[in-house]
Length: 85
Image (cartoon, rainbow, N blue to C red):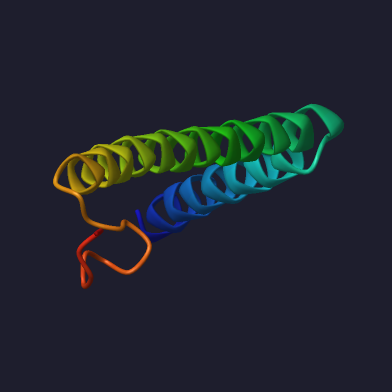
């Protein structure tokens, strides 16, 4: 009975080790590296797109502020500290 128990433990550990080694080998294969690089590139592209969108929104808000300041006769460069004459 004891031998059967240890045989079962050995088989289970062997299966886990083989699965882990196979998964690691696939990750470092050319296809696995390409998939990883593709995922990283997609993440980078998404970050750049989000940054560009945030910059566009900020520029639009700033343009509205400048237009409002000019309509009120304030200089946009000095934050409205001086009135135009």
